[in-house]
Length: 532
Image (cartoon, rainbow, N blue to C red):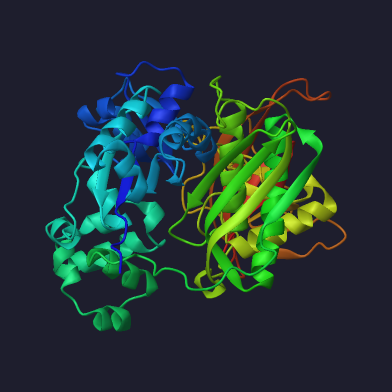
C-alpha cells in the first residue's frame, strides 16, 4: 500500500488584522486590533508587542495601546482580501484547498517532486505570498491538524513524527485553529486542564473508548488529532447523483451585489439537494465561468459540515475577491474578462447528514452560534415570500433606554448597530435590563386621585400611589415602592407651552409583584419595560 501524501499548510498570521489594515490602507507598523462582542479576537504584531492580547476587552486593549486602530470583525472583508493570496498559491499548486481566509492546505505528493522537495516548495510558496505583500509561514506533516499547528512555528515535522511533535505542546493548542474544531472545543480544553491534563500528549495517552464514553463527539475528533490520526475519517460514502449545481446566470453577473445574491440562491439549491440525499458537504469546489469562457475555481475544506449560510459566504468571498482583484496576468485567476455566465457548485466530499446537528435554542444575533442554520433557513424562506425588509433581527446598539439599545436590521445585511454601543451614554439605564419592552400609555395617580407629573427640576409633583390603564379599561394597581424620577433629557418646545419639557424615567413595584420602568415624555407616562 502506497504511503499517504504528506500535507503542507500555509498560514498567514493574524489575517483578520492584516486584512483590516490593508482595507484601511494603514502602514505595516501601525497597531491594529479586530473586535467581536467587545473583545479582541485578532491583533497585529505591533499591537501584540505593546501588550495587546486576544480576549482583552476593548477598553483594556486601548488603555494598553492608545494609538491602536480598532475595527469590527468582518468575514467578508477577510475573504475578499485573501483571494489574491489564494490565487498566488493556486498559480503554483492548483490542487490547493482553502480552509478559511488566512489558511490553505495542499497535498505534497506531486507538487514536492516538481519543485525538488518539500523545503523547496515551501520556500517558493512563501516567496509568492510575500510578493502579494503578505507574511506567511509553512508547516509540513503527515496529518492536516499537525501541519496546521506546525505552520504556526514554521516547522517541517519528519515523516512518522506527528505524534511526537504534538506530545509536548500545551493542551490549549487543541483549540488553536477554530476551523478544525467543534463549537465546544474551548470548553473541552478548559475541562481537560482542570482534570490535570496539561499537554496534548497526556490527552493522547487516554484510551479512545474512555474519551468516547466520557466526552462529546468533538472530544473524539480532538483525541484523533492528538494521536496524529485524521480528525475526520475519510468519507466512504459515494457521491449521490445530481448533487452538482450548475446555475446559468440570467442576467449575467457583473456586479458584486448580484454575485452575492446569486451565491445565496444556489447555496440554498445545493443544500436542498444535500438534505434530500441525507448527506452534508465537508469539501466544496466553487467554479465560475465567464461569458467568454474564462474559468475561476476554488476548493473549500471545512472541519464541520457546510451550512447554506457558510456556503453562500464562501461563494461571496471568492467572487468578490476575483471581481475586485487588481491582477492582470493572463491566467485563469486574472480579473474576469467578461460578465459571469455560469456558476457551478461541486461537492467533493460528503458525510452522513447526522454530522450536521440542528437545535432551535433561540433567535440569537447575526453571526452568533445561537442563530442556528435551521432557524436561518426558515427566516430566509419567509423573507423570500414577504420581501427583504419583512424579516429583521435585533443588534445591540447604543442608547439610554431599553428600546434605544436595540437596532433592527434586515436579515442578511451586515449587523451594524445604528448607534455606537461603546459610547458613554450618560443617563443610560443600568443593569439588569427589563425582560420585556413596551410602549403602552398609563396614568400615574397620587393619593388625591390627581395625575402625577414631573416638575421642570426633575421631581414628582406628588407621591405616586397607583398606576392605571387609560380609558376604557381603567384597570389599576397599587404602587408598593417607587424610585426616581431620573431626568434623561429635554424635549422640544411645544406649540402651547413655548418652552422645553423635561423627560424622565422612574421605576415602580406594583401590588401584583410586577416591576415597571416608566418613562415620562410629552406630558404623559408610558410603560417602557417590565421586570419579571
